[in-house]
Length: 253
Image (cartoon, rainbow, N blue to C red; front, side):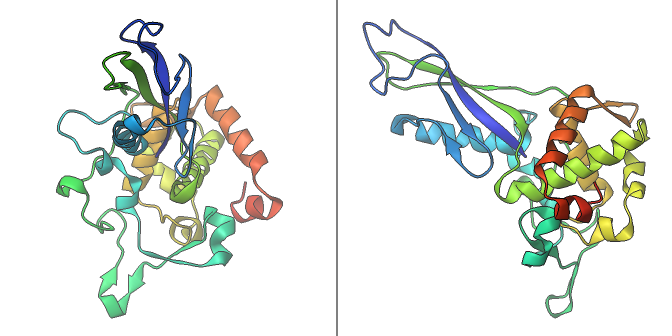
């Protein structure tokens, strides 16, 4: 999942003759970090902003014509969970995986059990660095304020935080073994690290998170082998510095 920002990039007409009544200026930004929106939101743009921010939060801009952006969520590959504050040191929120619920006839099998039915009845594992921004134009024909909306980083707030932390753990493992094959990353985690931290790891969710890391330029993937970039090393160090001593010990960072 991704942080997304909308930026005022221009006017379709002469702003001095038909001024924006919300007083948007070129360079103004609205940022969604997965939990909160920062910036001034014109009521007339609330609906288009909502749709664009939601789509890019899910796919990062990789979704193609006819694809439902929500199909890219790593969420679909996760087990059910319960809230347990003791697990906050692991995932940042406090989700404890519950891979088996006999009373519900539920058992999570990594790479086989979807959490729920994804949009359109399928899930998508996005790969590659190709992404698109979304262009929006205010409906006020006097000014036609123009916006560009784009994903610019991994989301690290709200219920995106556990997935962000898993991404950083993957980044850490690969930094220690450059050139690790995608399908071998899971072997760098112990059974407890793999299964007992939310979201539990399987090949599918690792591939999803690797795809997100690649899109943001934190790793390079060539022939399905992963190497951390300089940008990724800096990101990892900033992440480690943001953790408490207890969190670093729990996550073995």
